[in-house]
Image (cartoon, rainbow, N blue to C red; front, side, top):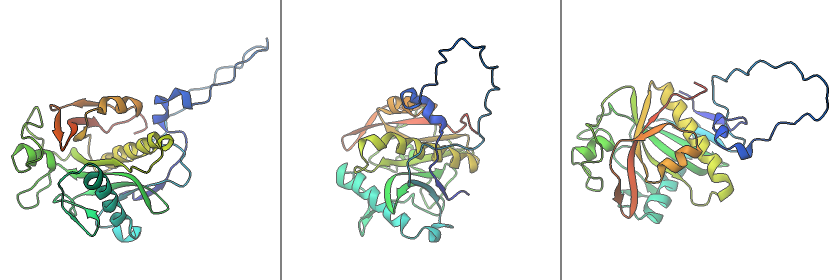
Length: 248
């Protein structure tokens, strides 16, 4: 399980932002052109956009002791977004937001810098079972979650080792506008790679209703798999993502 990495340059996701990629030099002389160079081989691991001291970490119950207070900071950042700003009715204690899906089965993808959480997301296997609960979309379909409609999906919620659920996706409110897109890119690339490492071919989850717009900006492959619905004033929709990417 990969736990922590340094943001690096040359991300495949940058192909979605041609205005950020320097244009190649144009030859103006009349000399014979250079012979064509062989096409570069795509890297087998993702190269992330350069954001200086930003880090992406994937936490589990087995490695949280290696990351100090990072998980606590992550849960506090979730509280600021989902409870303080969005006014969702969620459990909280000591300034942290949590629910029944924050268990040893989960993985937490956290983007951070100098201890400050910039964004994150939670991953849960669709094979999860903890008491009466499994994972968010399936439990909503079974009528166990009053805030999410039971018709959240167009089909029966999957139970498969090759499908994981993503939930609690957020970018912290204090991340400046010019950094939000690179932070989103790092977050989604780390999510995709982490899911692949855990054997997932797809990730299913609830995303903002404007998901199709930012998915195009991040060069992600996904389809809607449920109707749009509102959670405390926020319009959302279930989507299914492919984890396979150009660098995998």
